[in-house]
Length: 332
Image (cartoon, rainbow, N blue to C red):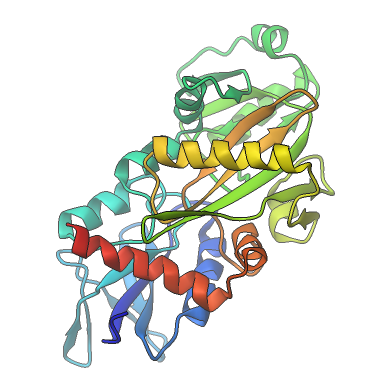
């Protein structure tokens, strides 16, 4: 392993409801990357403001032309970027496209996988094309006339109403009565111009984390998510209102099926770095729920739990992610 100090930009923030979660993820990354190997800089991106927070409270703006940072009359160029932005612009393909143009390696999925995974409706149709079960759904834009009666007759109740492109269950509602659908739809439209109304699949929620490292796909132990709330919403995810059981207490052959599905989809969606696939396990089948191309990596997140259950320390886990990104340069 190259022991020359590498400059690593840890980008966080973003333009979505996951802003604060992203910051916690970035802190986790910096905490566990060795200062003997990496010069780490947590950089904030919020709308048009891209900056490095100074100790005196001032903000030093980044040069967007080459993604460099000037401190004390010295210009810092980055060897790799740890993309810790959940949502726009880190997870929807915009930042990956920018870094591709600058030929700066980064830790997250590439443009194609990011764009696909970020639009849940399109991603579900892609997954469904391989014969993998997904929930039946409708997709609407703000200009559509939504026939509530048809939605209920087709999908039944309850249903989930969610923004097509959001994470951490921001803007998501579980609707049990038809009269509550208009309010839930309006709430989802606050976060996206396209929404999904999806049938509620009754079952156990199972998460599978994976990490690509040195041409080997590491599949972590599964996690069962048991929410104290009606579903695994923002409060359940980040305010301790859920039990996350790793390894998931399911039969080995079922666990192997879920891991095989995750590995298959990782390759078919052309994922990179580390991701998390979520499924609903019913008595009859396994339903694909979503692909998280930049899953949470704060202390409260699932992926760190799975990596530790796999036998990795947090230092090892984050170093492997960064080293895999740095390897992108040698493969180009």
